Image (tube, rainbow, N blue to C red; front, side):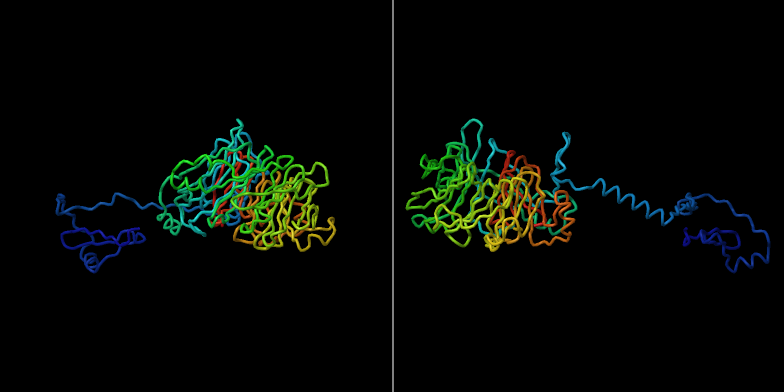
Amino acid sequence: LRSKWASTRTTENNTLSCSVGNMGKRTRNKSDKNLKNKSTTAPAEKSFEETFDNLKFEDPYEDVFEEEDIVNPDEGMKMEAEEDEKEKASGKAWTPSDGLNKDEVLEVDPTAYKMLHNLNVEWPSLSFSILDDDLGSNRTRFPHSLRLISGTQAGNGKNSLTVAQLSNLGSIEKGEDESDEESDDDDNEIDEDPMLQFVSIPHDGGVNRIRTVQTQLSNKTTTLAATWSDTKKVNIYNLNEPLNSLETHKKVGSLGKRPVFSYGGHSSEGFAMDFTNNPSNPSNFLITGDCRGEIHLWNMQNNCDFSAEKFYRSSVKGVSVEDLAWSPTEGTVFSACDTSGYIHIFDTRAKNKAMLSRQVSKTDVNVLAWSKHVTNLLACGCDDGEVSVWDLRNFGGAPASNSVPLARFTYSQTPITSVEWHPTDESMLCVTDDVATYLYDLSIEDDVTTEVKEDNDKASVPPQLLFLHCGSELLKEAHWHSQIPSCVVTTSLSGLSVFIPSNL
């Protein structure tokens, strides 16, 4: 309605004004009343020609009124409920147990990651180890840089160790709806492509497992790497020269590509291996276990000279030692798990004897992790997909049939391939199976009752599961980066992945 617009018409004796659109009413001024008394017929208007200074206004538009749809409130609520049900049905979260059809592939959700990079390799690696650098701890600003060493399982028999440096690892690209705070942080990020530098070292046989440690040799910080070969040998490498080559771009000499020590005392190949948590102590420096149930104890002499001897052999025929872990506080105590479903606690001062033994699974116990923050907690992963956390203070008290772990997760449907505690958070655990990487937070309490939990153990997502990373084929290992908070690196048949979840 144009209530404020008025039209004016000029006659010979007076001026007639009216407001248009004011509920269709017309108002007259005082001169209109006088005009009505004098004459009932208004004089005719003089016709005039429009000029630029005298234009006649005509409104070409008519008022349009739209009819509003009246909706019954009950019907509106019913329609909203139906739409919500459709969204819930179509928006069900995918889990690894659901599997994928032949024509389906997983797509990355950028909002789930702060950083995500994938690295394809010529030959897959069963094992790798992250190398500490001098760039500082608690690094949060992008781009990131990290170093690692991995060993190949080459089909042509030409295996090698790869010392690699990944640089310019930027944050994942966000959508237009990202917050201003994130945009400000990204402004400080250097927009460059990721860079890979590496040095290859020939290796005799496929690498079953690799572990590293930093120690002082001749008043110099030295990085050592131990490899389990499928040729029944354990090799020790000095990585100082290959690491310097990444900085100086100089070729590594022939001596830098050879192991400084090689041990062939095992009767079969193996996978279990762990360096001491106190590398300044040359005794009890390394432990290795093989597929025939043997555990060998290593001592280090000067100039990377080692001595190793058989410490223990299982009395059960056909048992394989799957993993080993040193105690974070006691230099003579370590744990072992095997294919009989047992976890053993050993003391190096008591040869060929386990101090404690407990059957924790009816299947193989594949991996172990001893917490460095809560030193009485020991986590393990089994062949049936179960992950459990045990309190060692009650490990040898109750009978095995009555033993109950502090936490148990049965969400995985395939064998557990690695388990590792967070380097700074005492309650977080990183777990991998054949299809995914799982990040658990044990500090989150479960609100589900025990009966319901037992009925839906395999189907429901545990509340402690904070993050689920998929997309890799046959995952083998995952490790936290100790200097980049919440950064996880994984290896699989399809290659390496480096990511930081958005919720950590």
